[in-house]
Image (tube, rainbow, N blue to C red; front, side, top):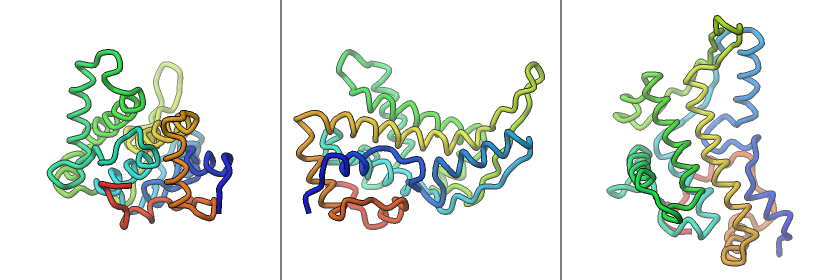
Length: 217
C-alpha cells in the first residue's frame, strides 16, 4: 500500500493523545493539571512503567523516522541506554557550539532532557533513578499559590513529565520539517511505510519499544 503525504504527516507529527512513554499522554497530563489548578489539591497520576530504557527508546524511536539523526541511538553508552550520559555529553557540546556545530533539533532536545534531569534532582527522584533506572508508577501532581498574585504554580513532578513531552515534540516537529526536505523525504517515507503499512499509527506508542532495535532503523 502506497501512503499519501497526509497519512505520513499524521504518523510522524506530534500527537498529544499518544502515549509515547507509558500509561499517560499530554492530554491526560493536561487534564490533571487543570484539576490541580481548579481545586488547588494534589492529584495522583498513574504513569505505569517509566524507566531509563523506555525513555531512551521512546526518544530514539521518534528520531529514527528521520535519517538526519543518524543510524545509531545517541542515548547508548557502554552498550546500554543512559539518558544522563546523553545530557552531560550534549550539554558540553552546546557549551562550545559554533554555527552549524549542532542542528537545532539536537539543541532543543538537549534543553528538554536537561530540564527532565534537573527536575528529577529537585524532586528527590534522581538518586533512585540513577541506581535503579526507574521512576515511581504513581506521581502526585500538586500546586502552590504564590503570595503576590494568588496563582497556582505546578510542582517539579509535573515538569518531569512535561519535559519528556516537549522532548518528543521537538523531535516530531523536526521530522515534519525534514519531510519537506528532498534530502530526507524519500527515506522518511520508506521508514513510515515499513512501520505503518496500513497508514495508521497506534496511540499506544510505547508498546512498540520492547522489540525496537536501538542501533538500526
